[in-house]
Length: 251
Ligand code: G3P
Ligand code: MG
Image 1 (cartoon, helix red, strand yellow):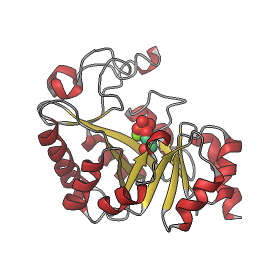
Image 2 (cartoon, rainbow, N blue to C red):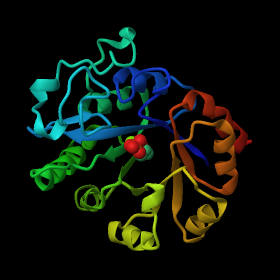
Image 3 (cartoon, rainbow, N blue to C red):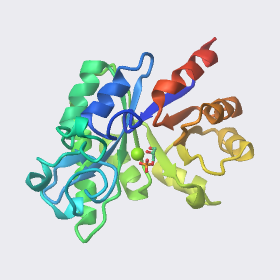
């Protein structure tokens, strides 16, 4: 079974990590998984955004962990993309749970690393709140927790061991100690960057018994190649163009 994850929803058609983007992804026939990035504000509210700063994907500026939720609640998370999406707000984690329940979508929750002096407290609070709020998700839906941040993956085991955990690796960060990291996180799932990924490396990870997902794959030819190498899934900004791939696999 080859899995396609809608990376930040369907960001080729709607602004990433907004409800518009997740709805667009959920409307794709046969797409079952959404990937989203979870961050936390200074006053400990979870929100869905990729960057540490508001600057790129909202009409505001500033570092999220240094601002309170009320300061960014009304910002537009869609205007940067196009006028049509001016009314898109930063989603909360509750918004995502409601959408997932409504549209029957599985969730890959990526926990964004927290920086700054209050980082350790905010990190633990993020994991605690994610684990609490996920209790509202329909039992029939699947969850995958992931992070580049090793302490966050480790904390996920402590707070929500019922969900599988993936460790995210950038190409440059995938070194000889990768299995030690996986062991430390008690994780069986490697989510690796696509850049310079070779068949040899795919085989090595798979032969060691791990599941392997690759991000971010936006070319169909590359997706097909990865599938043929034995990769378990891909994250894509163009999930609407990748479903045929899945069909071919299941034939
Ligand atoms: O989870 C896959 C992918 O989203 C990881 O990288 O930077 O897009 O969150 P990034
Ligand atoms: Mg992500």
